[in-house]
Structure formats: C-alpha cells, structure tokens
Image (cartoon, rainbow, N blue to C red):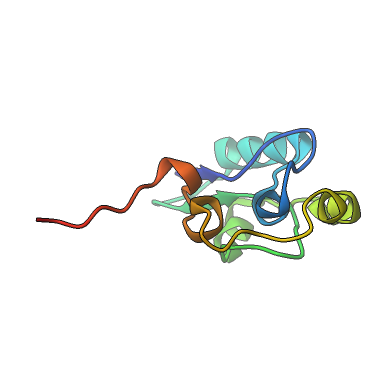
Length: 107
C-alpha cells in the first residue's frame, strides 16, 4: 500500500491546497482503511479529502473502503480572498511536488 498524502493541515493555506487538502479526520479514515483492508495488492491511494478541485484520480481508494467525508470547499471563499491569483511560474502551481521539485536539464 502506498499512501500519497496531499496537504494535511487544519485548513488549506492557499489555492494549491484546495486541491490537495486532507483533513485530519479523513487522514485517520484513510490510515484505518489501509490497515484494515482485507486485500490490497499494491495499491497507490492519494490522501485527499472530497475536494471539488483535485489533481489526482482516487477511484482506487474505494476498494480499500476509504470514503472521505470532509472537503476543502468550505474554506474556498477565505482562501480565494487571501490569494486572488496564482503565479503561473510558481513551482507549487506547476509541479505536484511544489517547491521540492526542481527540473534541471541534462548536460
């Protein structure tokens, strides 16, 4: 089982986290589902709540019984008021790994 955790905080900090947000309660539900699923094979499950905006297809989460109950959508108005636009050149807007990813050319 590979759990790919998005952004688990009390609330999303910016527009990017509206897509990757994972509430603490949904994180607990995800871990319990992963540890108690009878058959998993090698499953890759994304740790995210039931967000309107997402980066990932998480349909495989259903076979382990993970059903997120929370969503970043309740925070959307406040986040969008704080961050009116997204810098299209910001690595956090371009890459899933955000600022931790740096693409460098070979040579």
